[in-house]
Image (cartoon, rainbow, N blue to C red; front, side):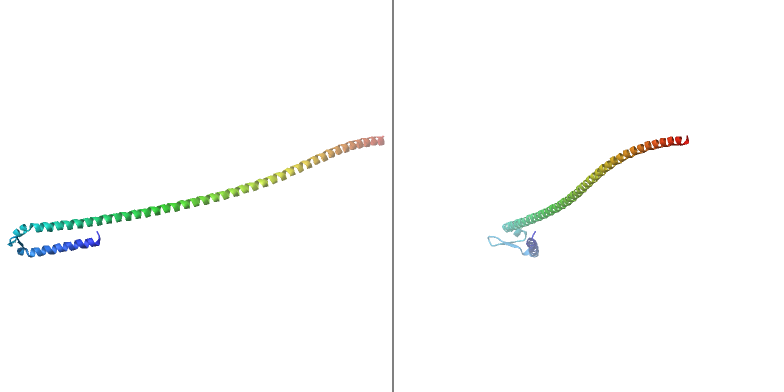
Length: 192
């Protein structure tokens, strides 16, 4: 309820209490003037004044109903304001949760993107290293082929020299054998 309603109800309660206290103090002086201008006192006066009590009761019912309607409307207003505040708070919490989730997702995507960039860089470096190794291996292979060809040529040259040396050695051997045979023949002639 609003503060105005609370103060109004409190004022009505205090006024009702004061009126009740005043009525109790003057109970023996209560009188009701009838149509023929005679006065009735006590309980008879209360019974005879039923139209007054009906009007007062009706006014009290109207005031009570009005105050109840105001209090109910205030209660509904406060409840709907509270629901609106709760809905706004929940909306803000949902928005904050969504923003946090979006931030987390963006961070995860950034991290994945950075990891992919790193992996791509690593792959490029490995490819470059493999290409360098391939070029170096091709150069080494070409160099070894040249060396093998050179060594094959050297081997052929050495084999040719060996063949010539062997031929020369055989010729010398034959010459030495001839010379030894001539020497033996000369010794045989000399010793005879």
